[in-house]
Every structure is written in structure tokens, then in C-alpha cells.
Amino acid sequence: MFRTQDNDQHDDPNDVEDEESSDESTDESDDGDEEETSTATFTADSDELNVTTQGSDPNDEDECEAPRDNTDIISSDEEMEYDDEEILDRSVILENINHILSSCRKIVNGINRSSILYETVQNLARPTVKGDLILDMRIRWNSTCNMILRLIEYRPILTAFMNQLPSIRGPTPKKKKKLLKLQLSDMEWNVLDTLKPALELFSDASDMLSGSNYPSLAMAYPVIDSLYHYLQSTSTDDIENTIKYVLNGTFHKYVYHPIDSPEHNLLLV
Image 1: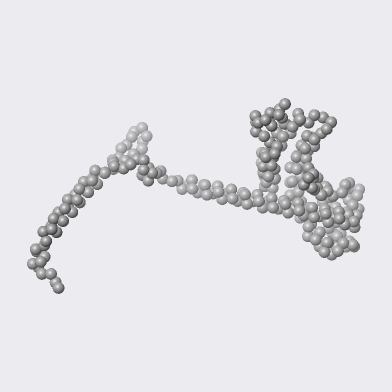
Image 2: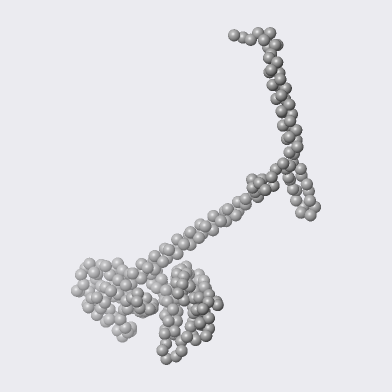
């Protein structure tokens, strides 16, 4: 049904009152909006334009929060990625060092436990090199350093030995194959060359402090201090820096003590 024109002309008076009340509320809200206008002030001292809104809470975090700088976010992310990469590289280097040392122990064991291989190596070593191959032990100080020093001394001899190994009679083919797989590459020999000076310093320090024919306590402080400064120095070689990092952690735990500590004061006596 369509509404007639008469019905449109005679509306309900209550509807008129509702429209009037809604108009009044709209006017009041408009007045309120006009009261909460923004005022801009310019201060000559700070040369900044300060904009404040009446009726707003200045302590509101949403209102007073400073804009974030994207460069800070990027730099922090890059720093985290750099730290992660550095830790990853360090763990890879340590894993390689452990693998190389494990191969060295297996080579020494394989040669020393076979009379035929031991005699072959000694014939190649004499008279150029004196002394047998050394196997390190956990309960012996500096034994790993001694093993590395002797292996470096035996490097040309071990190279010649590996070349002759397939033609040597006596050892089983399985043992020969195992030893040939353990042969160190040039890169692995370079790692041993990097380990050598770092471990030699600690070996010399322990020998100096273990002397029985002279008072060694007076030498403790300068020896420990020299080791500390060596570990704090940096190198262009990542392997050397990783070795120093690992040694530095153990050094601070067991040896180095802060100034004015009882242990430090005892060293100064």
C-alpha cells in the first residue's frame, strides 16, 4: 500500500519533538567539539611548534608516545643477526678444531699400537727428529700442546709415511684405509699451527710457576697479567680469535681474579 499525501502532511507530533531534541543534542556536541580545539604555541627559546589539545590527558601514553625511529629497529636487528652469525661461526670453528684433534689422536694411536707402522715412522724420522709421537691425556697438563708440537715436527715424516702406507706389508687393508682417511689437509695443518703459539704460552707459564729451585709466587702476578693481556688482544685470524675466546672464559673462571679480591691481594705479597 502506498502512503497518501495526507498521511505525509500529518505526521506524529512526537516525531517532531524527537527531531528537535536530536537537533539540540547535535548542537551541544558541536559546541563541545569547538571547546576541544587544538591550540598552537610557538616558543622562541626552543624554536619548536608545540601543539596541545585541551581536554586531553598529557600523561596518556598513546598521546605522548614519541615516534619510533626505524633506523634503531634496523640497527638492532642487524646487530642481532651479526651476533648470531658470530656465534655460529665460532661454534663451527670449535667443531673443526675438535675434529682435527680427534684425527690427530687416532693417527698417533694407530701408529704407536702397530709395531710395523711404528718402526716405519721411526726409520723415516731418524736422525732428523728425536722423540716419539705423543698422545695427550686429560689428567696431564699441557699434553695437548706437546702432542701438537710433536705432530708439527713430524709433518714431513707423516706425509712420506702416508705415501708409503699402501705398499707396507703387515697392516690390514682396513687399517690402512682408516689411516689414509685421517690424513690431515693443508688447512688442518694451518689450524694446528695457529693452536701452537696460544697453547705454548700457557705451557711456558705453567712451567715457570711450577719451578722448585726458585720462589715462584713472586712471578705469579706478572705471568697471569701477561696471559690476560694476550687473551684480550685481537687478531685478523678468526681461528686465533676463537681460541682466545674459549681460553679467556676458562681463564677468568679459574685463574684471573678482579682487583682488590683476596686472591689478587695474595699475588701482590
